[in-house]
Image (tube, rainbow over all chains, first blue to last red; front, side, top):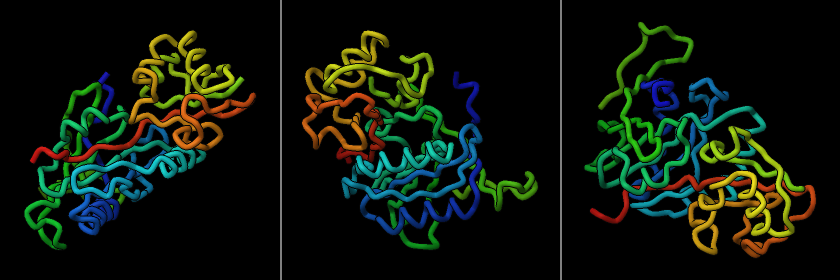
Length: 161
Length: 94
């Protein structure tokens, strides 16, 4: 089953930057959100920052009303959550036990950003990593940042790590 | 007969269907009816006598946590949406 999954997250620079900016803005609380894309496209196209209803430095949760609205909207647009992102603000950008236990979108790229060790400051290097989480199994994947999605691979660059 | 929207992660119980129909005058009855046709789904929704902490169930757009929980009435032709919470985080162990 996992063979069908793309082992790379391809994401455009503007969306990458928007996720990082959100993580920095909400530091020291965890930031969270979704990047929706056309169903089956695997293309993160529509950046949707979400409110962390837990407002916590160690936990995030979408508000249940916001969650319903989000999924209804994606349904209406024939979209799915291509990326589900959140930040860790004092630990590494790797899924925690909680993240693994609660992961419920086997088709999504789970993006983690870490704002620890001063990375909340704009212009400093920041860890931005992507994972598949399926049935409790975590698989890290490459993050490929492109200027635009119609660009060919010549303009592809590796994500800063 | 209510329409029940099934999230991706529970579609293995519904042969991949995104929506199924179920009957019941309350959410509790509706879940029993779901279970009768889609064995195993109930355990994914309930933890003992309660809805699981990280499962959200909505009847006509209302989260049942605020409308009487499993005893929430389900009118004929209601739309029931099941959504797993989107949640996680670093946790307290640091």
